[in-house]
Length: 250
Ligand SMILES: [Fe+2]
Ligand SMILES: [Fe+2]
Image (cartoon, rainbow, N blue to C red; front, side, top):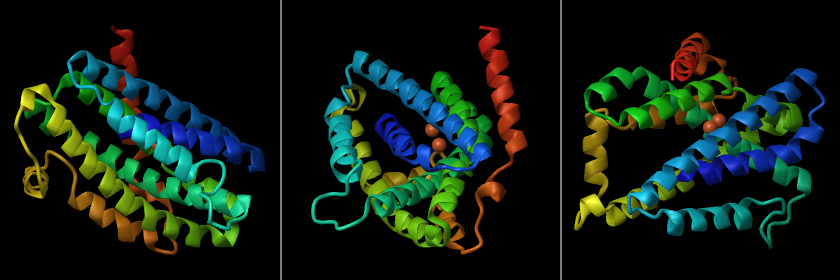
């Protein structure tokens, strides 16, 4: 539910940033990043269409999310926040670099846990989608980080630290709301409730990531950090090659 609005927001922010990028290689990476995120958003939208057809309409959640991105993190800073357009752009890029750090960690997690989740009966179509998406997150893991470095220079560290400080509580809040929303509305879970105990049980069983996400925070905040060491690009490319072969085989 978070991905379509979130990834479209990435693309909007990058549309503002692209004309300022002076390095040809980075410009090509940024264009590739925008294309991948726009595709991810569309494909995850198809999942929401599927849920709606099955009786679970996610629009009350996603519409609020979209308006949060538009009003809170749009082209202009929220009223009362006296920031220059450049600082506002760098801050949002810092937030995206932080979120992209997590999407890389999540991409690695889904690929490494893939066989175990398949064996546990995870939906095969959803797993195929997450493996593909996860591999592309690993592939472009450094683009947001490097764009921020290119545009913010010595301010980059402060921007990504603030980005992380904002991203963590916002993501926890959105995941919490989103999980409760889904459980309350899923026709197959009538009358069910959920709480943090369920989350702890799921992370202990390694059905959802937990400790990996917490451990990722201090790593990102190390001053000399670079995302290159986060995950293996060869593993990601092997996954993408397999996805492509599966698509070609129909
Ligand atoms: Fe993505
Ligand atoms: Fe991404």
